[in-house]
Length: 128
Image (cartoon, rainbow, N blue to C red; front, side, top):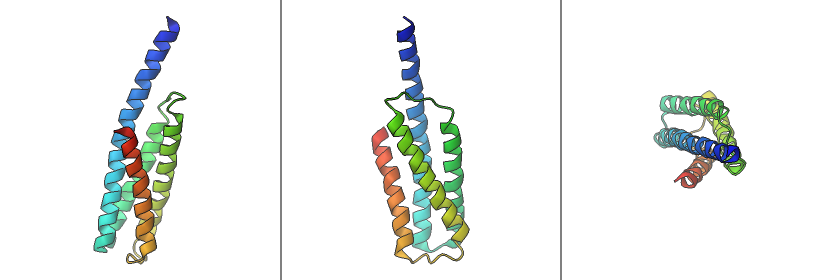
């Protein structure tokens, strides 16, 4: 009976983790959309704010992620999301620190944003 109770408890933990991850992904996705819009509008002030939001939300998510203990079955998903958060945090920090001097017309900058945004979108598909 103990094994069954442990399995049920782990199942609940996994469900809670996936619910949290979905909400976290929604916020991160919204931050990327704001960054992309700021880049397209060439609005440095909005870019700094959106990039700062991305960095903050990624750090908060990485911290909250530590409170979960997903099952071995979910470990690959958790590890992938952790990598996405790390990449997103790095990009957010870069954009925030360099927004004033960044060439917002540079295609490479937009490609980095779109590449990371695609990772987030792929993760959203995982959770639907």
